[in-house]
Length: 135
Image 1 (tube, rainbow, N blue to C red):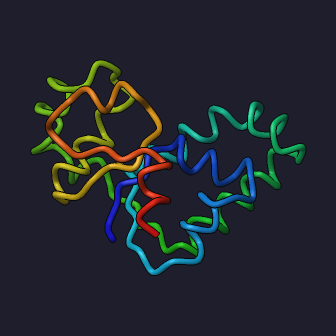
Image 2 (image 1 turned 45 degrees about the horizontal axis):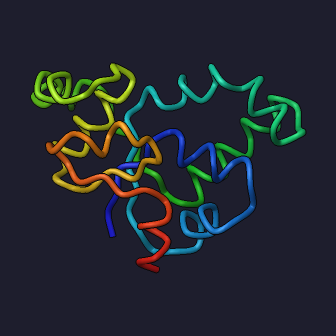
C-alpha cells in the first residue's frame, strides 16, 4: 500500500505506542510526506514534548527514527508545483495543500485524521480507523 501521511498521523505515532505506530513501522508499505512536514512537526515540538513526556530533542530523535525505519520518502515542494493550484482550490485549510498536492501527484490516497479533508473529492482520504481495518 502507498499512502501520503498527514502530520497528524505521524503525531499519533509519536505520542502513543499503538496500532498507528506499529502499522507505520512494522509493515511493508510505502509512505510519502512533503518536505515541510518536519517544520510543521517542529512547530508543535513543545506540545509533543508535553504529551510524550520527553524533552524536545528526544522527540526529534524518535521522529527521525520513525521516518528512517518506515522509509518514509520526503518529497520536495518543488516537485508539487503542477498540482498546487488544484490543491489550493479544493482545500479549506492552506496547511493541507501540500498533502493533497502530493497525493494528486502520486495518484495515491492520503492518510489523515482531519475530517475537513474528507469533504474534498480530488484525492481519496482514509482516517486511521479505515487504514488499520485494512491490515
